[in-house]
Length: 207
Image 1: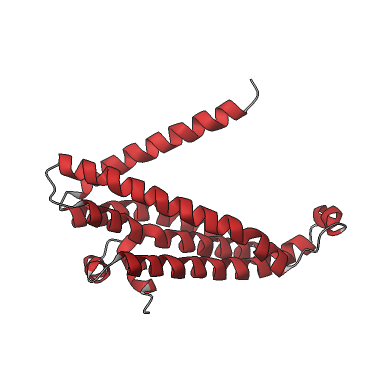
Image 2: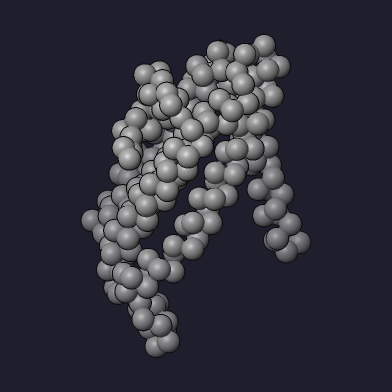
């Protein structure tokens, strides 16, 4: 199977041609295969990051107490993280399905002709963000090893708002709506998520 990594990356940055390629011949089976390769790609970045992280751990005496009871190396770090990686990927894809349903309802309110399946697929293609997040973590660990983490963080903060806009643009193109409509709705969704997280964190803190 051909895993269109570059097409996925172009898709989340608003490419119309990439959207057309991904939607052409898409089936649940093909989507499941895409998800499988996304997990493999995330795992590859975790393995490389684990190899880099071990250098930081070995240089930190804080971990000496753990070495008395556990073997800390690249493979133990990797193996320990894999269950969390798979769980977060499953939760992320389920969240994208829910968002696909919600966005479908919003699009229909604005007289879009998009169907539910297309709306869900449009959000599912964004699952590439999971391995890209691990790629960022790898870049961050590498930059820490090189002593220049600020550069990676600056690039992240520059790309994040651009990505937020292009994700809005891509769904708007698929749904036949204006980018501003979806962009404002995305801001609303982010506001709700931020409020929920704030409430959860606040409830966990002592009064």
